[in-house]
Length: 251
Image 1 (cartoon, rainbow, N blue to C red):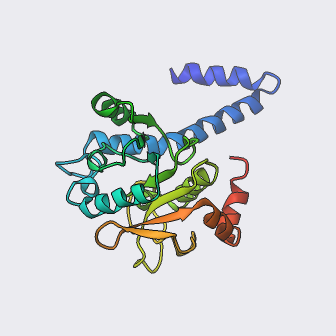
Image 2: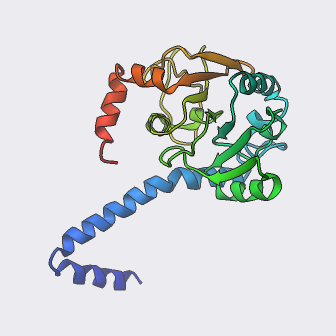
Image 3: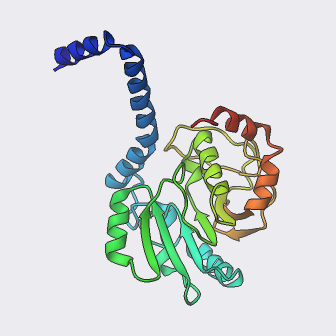
């Protein structure tokens, strides 16, 4: 098989534009592998129960005990803000969110990169107010919603993928972003995709402004509520963000 591939490559190389074609094909495969690396990674985490939690394959942060305080705060927030459409991405296995007491008529969209979870969730929980979609928050267009909850996610992302998620929000039609953050974290550090650490979004290289409010989420972690307008204004002054945009302008 390797010999056949080598002969095929040599034949293409002698054609007009053959070398150019092979170079473009190689770059395409490299970019494709990068694009789906994190999808494959988190799919493997789910299939092997990487987090080792008996209650939820999404990890201990998705247990009913760990989300008890947050569910209470979120329920009050949804009612007070008159939220009619809630995007929860990543939604994981929907272990805790199904117990949130939603205001009457509120619709829920669970977005998840692991296709198996989406299929199982739709079979078990979908109805006229609840549905689940395949969604990669680092590059897919988000559906319209009143809020996007992004809980326990960015702590697993490298800086590059956090920036990609920020851009996803800014390009969406969603006015409010609810994101896990750790105000007590004094200095952020970069990691490989899929690892974890605390992230303070109000410190560099993200330098978010003060949120509209915090929702309690147990321990040092809270959920910051940011508007698109406030983030857009702050990021205009963020040199690291502007540099990242310039480097990724054609991606």
